[in-house]
Image (cartoon, rainbow, N blue to C red; front, side):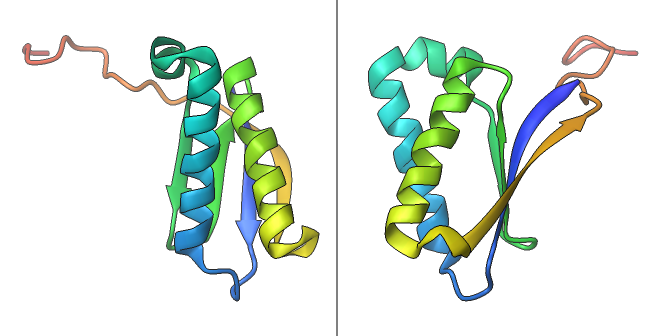
Length: 104
């Protein structure tokens, strides 16, 4: 089960700036926890078409990214620029059941 924060943005918010703020939040968390911990625990997704950002909240790293991201958005665009909800999804495996490069 994946535990996510799902952010949706108003049409008048420049989505490029949203993506920049997410990457800034991730970079600042990486400065605290290190590159290795970010590679292990950070998981987020930007979907420009639907104006949605999803951040995995199952680790302290993900929760920290979400906290900073939320603060950056509120300071720059105001509290009404987005909605956020907690979402639980069935986890989709990142790798198929066969070995990479191997035959099924």
